[in-house]
Image 1 (cartoon, rainbow, N blue to C red):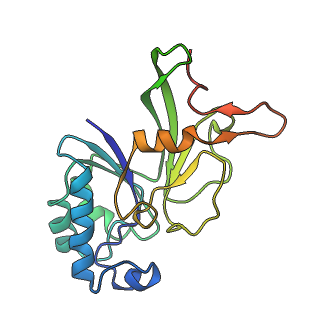
Image 2: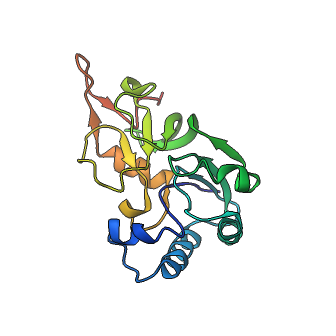
Image 3: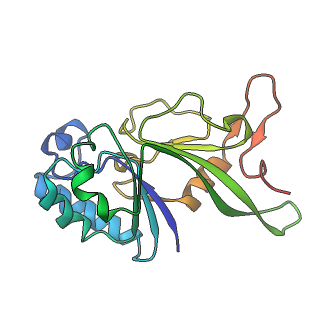
Length: 199
């Protein structure tokens, strides 16, 4: 079982093709393209967190898409989701505005041993400037910005499809991205994200 994150699919949203320069010529083509990208990565027993702005359509069209998407689906609501959430809510295991996950991850210690730690992950549709446990190596995953924010050394990542080849991104891939970043909160020594919760 793998844990995945994604955001801002905007199924059935015609204007997003132009706004984000998506490589498709119609909304129908975009839907099929994103479904294919999703199912290439996510297996039926995987867990996926969608961080908002799922679809711009009515109940029937949204359900038709949801029934084709693999995985156990959880939903962090985006600013465009509130009209749809009551209609398609039963297709998601959890529906939240914000949450703090704690996920078991492994890392290789300096002695070569594989060790485990609990990684806190703050999930919200919107980017947060200062988030819970930020000074102690927590991650912040969000959507909303479609890759328009400047790059940062902080442990914050836009998981929207427009940032990751139109695909979900796994927790392991995020771990590898953050392993290359060092966070230096004001007045403190650098915190290594992989070792902050190690033994």
